[in-house]
Image (cartoon, rainbow, N blue to C red; front, side):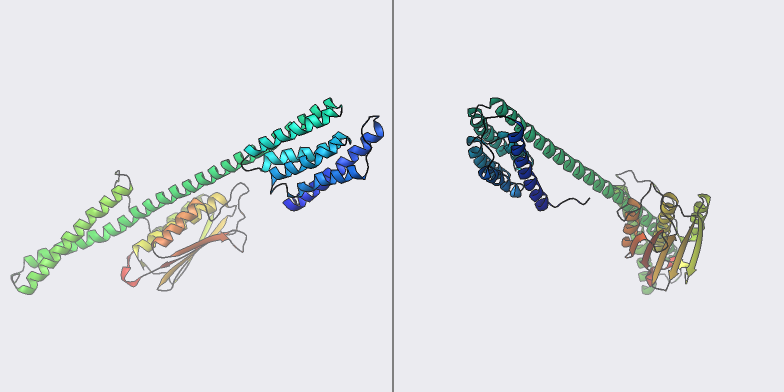
Length: 389
């Protein structure tokens, strides 16, 4: 059953309180022999007037209590069946505790109701009914407080869990960025080391030439020596930055994997029971090392997700290189395992997205038309970056 919206629920509650109050009044008049005044149109009108403020109980809880009190006082003073007013009074007391902001005025409103109703009803000779009615009011009031405190506690716990998850996502993404930095260091360090060696060798060969004092050769030698020194200094700075990212505990890392080692991922997946079909279109042997590393990591994480989260026994890896962009697609035919979900806010997908963005690319992931999960990524391939992968 669909939950009622607050205005509709309040209308239903006001009508129910009125009908219940009239039914109680008529029933008590029929089954008991008391000196209370007979139920007439005035009694029904007063019960209706008491129920009407409940229509706005969520918006103005304290004024509603005071309005109910103002109408119920003449009702009791006229000595109509006192119990008939209890449904409205109970709802008003519950509302004051549940919806007042802050709750402090609700305590004063409850005391005011008790202070007025108790002597008015007691004056009619129904002291027991007065005490019982005040007891019901206090029970309804504290029930409202209990509901209020529980909702506040649930909201606080939910907010804390969401914050903890956000912190965990941020921590995982930070760790992934450190790993990306380490792999970029390996790629750049290799290139700079080659530059340093080649510049040093070239400068040394020039220095051994008989005509090394000629202005052009001397200028070339000076330039090569400066290039060698600059590349060596840059290598040291790269290592220092990486040490900072690792909290001062940086250690030499293994060579970063690349697309040339894609067969290793295929074998890993097949060992876990998932057959992987690799389709390539226009893929060249030469790709920028950074792009090759990022592509390898995206495929690795995608296949890992297939193994962990999907019941699929087959996955497809498509690589398409048009000369300017490398397009990657990893598709499985699912469905997902009943106890596992893969969402765009997951740590693995966040890491893959960060890797793609680090080289100027894009990545998206989500359910595919085949019923499984698909990962798409496009990575730019600048012409001047091309080195053997």
